[in-house]
Length: 288
Image (cartoon, rainbow, N blue to C red; front, side):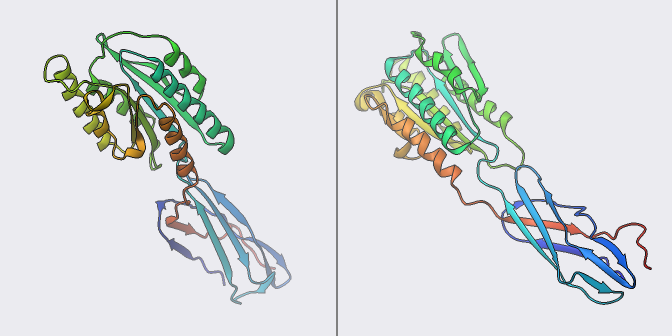
């Protein structure tokens, strides 16, 4: 007597599906049926699920019950799709921006080498001509360094349009069903004046900040201005002061990027939400 069973396991976390686990191996020895334990691994992206079965006896006679113990271990670690960092750079690139930008790249390279984490970065630039992608998302982090070191002296473009370009870039790179681990480093400054062009800049920055904060990414901001007049608006951009810095401090944002990356990488693996297992008897099974 052979019993075909369907087993369903439910826990908490992401949704996975492991099917066609494969039949138990049956071999005949006179009137006994031998069962060889097997293990199969299913790897639905972006998680890893190991399924192991243990049979209670090495052999059973026909119609005798047998216990099959199954262990399911699922690991869906945060940032399985990698960490993405996008810089939004204004028309003017100063020495402070260069120090912050290169500092972030230094920290990302060290984090990648220490953790083995997949890390990509991109740079979006905006000036009076418009917004454009200077460097698309790439794992070759050093490609962004010329972006910070090349001197640029121009008026900023549309802050809101540059922010939306960054969001489109990150969403296009997202992996379905994977947790997004994205950081946006928003650089610039706007004087708190009620006269053009500063009044227009201020409104654009506020709209850009609203769009960025609504996203699933983590928003960090660096202000090149001085005091309340130069950085009053910028101080309201990130959700936490942990992710804000201004001149002359050029070390806080690079360190914040690294710390957040470490926290995401060390995050407790997510559990299993649902798993369906189908047990199929091998075709052509015979007895002696």
